[in-house]
Amino acid sequence: MWYNTITIWLLHSPLQGMFSGNTMVVRYTGRKSGKIYHLPVDYFRVGDTLLTVSYTSRTWWRNLRGGAPVTIYLQGKDVIGYAEVIEDEAVVADGLKAIIAGKTQLSRIFGVKLSADHQPESESLRRAAKERVIVRTLLE
Image 1 (tube, rainbow, N blue to C red):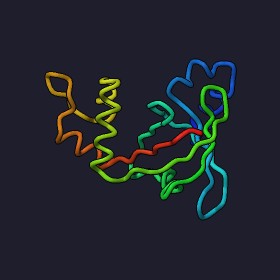
Image 2: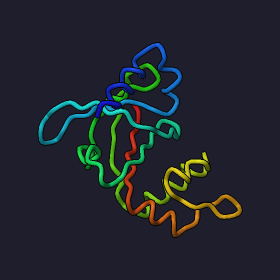
Image 3: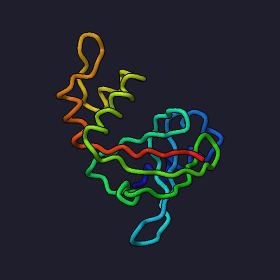
């Protein structure tokens, strides 16, 4: 997609500081093709772990099933990591809940309704988790 190329260029440019607070480039190898892919994705940082949420209908994350080494272009630097895909709906729901707890406005992006006390409603959280996976990247 053309906008991926532009995003990657921006993240490698002097303007990267405006974008790299929540966007990174994942470099991984295709399992069947052996081709190296570069994909800009949004991330949520939890210590030395980066979480990326993707729709199950996307295909890129399937190359990371079972775990895979990745190189992340993060805030102007290449960082080595190990990515694994979380597909279990209950675990994805917990991950979405944790992400939303850190930034409640993300509930709209994930289609999760919040209760009056700003907690994710369990049914909408379950629906959101059903159509998403989380890619967890542990940084070295």
